[in-house]
Amino acid sequence: MKFGSAYLASAALGAAVIFAAPVPAQSQAAQTDWTKRVTMSDMGGHVMGNPLAKHRLAEYMSYTCNHCANFEAESHGPLKSGFVQKGNISFEVRNLVLNPIDLTAAMLARCGGRTAFFGNHRAILTSQASWMQTFQSASPEVMQSLNEGTVPQRLQKIAKAADFYGLMKKRGYSAGQIDACLTDQATQDKILAMTKYATGTLKLTGTPSFTLNNKPIDNVHNWARLRPALVALPE
Image (cartoon, rainbow, N blue to C red; front, side):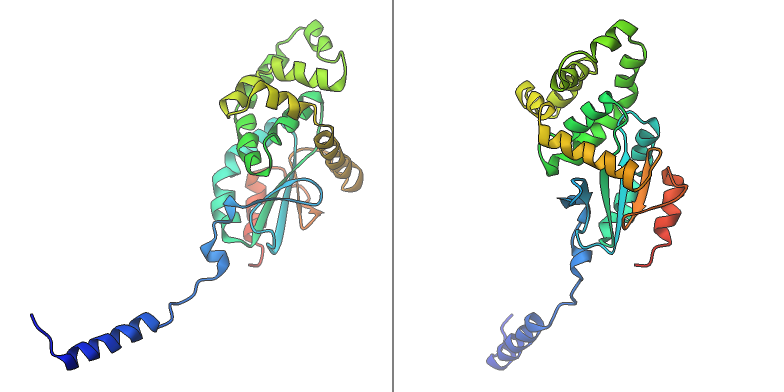
C-alpha cells in the first residue's frame, strides 16, 4: 500500500506530536520498591524503606525471644507490601540484647554489611525453635562451659553449639568471615549501645517493643496490635 507525500508528512507530524506528548509522571515513591533499600540509622540499626519516610517505625528485638520470631513470621510479608513499599513508612530493626546467645545471633545478623542484614535476620529467626532447643536441653555443665573464656571465645562457642556456623555457611559465609564477625568489637559496641538506649532512655521492658518516630508505642508487642496503629497513620 502506497501513501502520498502529503500523507507521509502528516503522519510524521502526528508521530512527532505523539512522541513529544508528555507521559503522565509517577511520583518517585510509586516507582521505587522501597523494600529493596536498606540504610543505617544514627543509632546503628538497619532501616528498610525510604530514608525520608514520614513515619519511622523501629522494632527493639531479641533473637532469643519467641514473640520476636512470631512477629517476623506474621509481619514479614504484610509489613513490607502494605506499608514500607509505599514509601511513607520505614522499618528499622534495633537490638535489645537479653543474654549472650542473643548477642551472638545479633553479631551474626550484621555479618556482611547492611544489604545482607535482613536476609540474615530472617534466617536466624525462622530457625529459632531449632537452635533454641539446643540450649534448652543442654546440661548445666555445657551451659557453664559457654560462659568460660574471653567474650569472643564465648560467642564462638555459642555459635558452634547453635550451629550458627552451618546456618551462615549456607548463606555464603566462610568460617573465617563468621569468626571475624563474632570478634568485631565495634559491632558489639553498637549492639550494646542500642540495648542501653532501649532500657535506659526509652525504658522498654520487653521484646518486641516498637517506637514510632522514636516514641514508644504503648501496649503493642505483636503484629496484630501494631497493624491497626500503622493503618491509622496519615499518608
